[in-house]
Image 1 (cartoon, rainbow, N blue to C red):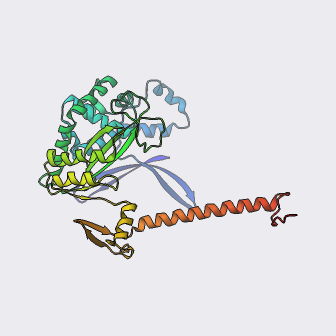
Image 2 (cartoon, rainbow, N blue to C red):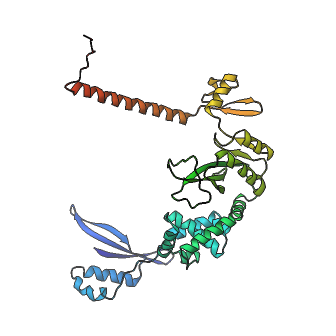
Length: 362
């Protein structure tokens, strides 16, 4: 192993010097070279140190006196923090949170959750391992400061969402919003919004909170709201309509929700605001429309069909993705049954006391 140095003179008169860490070996009567690393960015002192180490690799005792005065320390990581900080700036998150200490603490809570999910205490420890103070200009905080910062976020949530929304939309007024809810179960009871409800996490005996997420047409979050754990999905929709029409000042908007989100009561809220809505209907509603003749089964084709009834427009199309899922599900069930039957038949064939002949009464 050796350091290979070469100089190249360019047409403009400049000289380019490159340094490569290489090794040589004999192959079929020819000397071949393998490049291990490019050392061109190293300083002259670093290159001399590498050459010195390679020269004395067979007698490391000569390097003992040097190693005694050298200490190796792990510096702070900067890559993850810098990358996420630049993304937060481009997305307008940093500007929406502001340059105050609370704004910077909130930004660190966001970045630390992306780097490594954990508690407030883990976010403090993470700051000592990453270049939080160097990149964000933030230092000297503990987990209590971060919990207090959550109170600040709760009190300023609407203003932060409004600033983030305005920075993204510019002169364009959104005409479509997507809305859905989820839930998160809690291990303890010390939460003013915790309650019993439909637990999507399938955690029996756990209270939960309900979270509603409002997004713009491109999927970017516009607002989030937390409700009591026993709040029905339908009950959360009206607040979103008021938010879009009031706080965001939007008109001629189409609200999109799943089949359990927009019913008759929610339709009235949408109409009062002068909005439109898009949702999916349930299997029972489809059967009712088929029975009344509003739609027919042959409409569920590869083509896009539509039907109108009582001022409602129904867009009808066969869902190839769902059809494939159902087909795979049926095939999986059939294979499971076949395996079960084969196992039982093998047992009856191999068992000494099993008799596959039909029983004839005496």
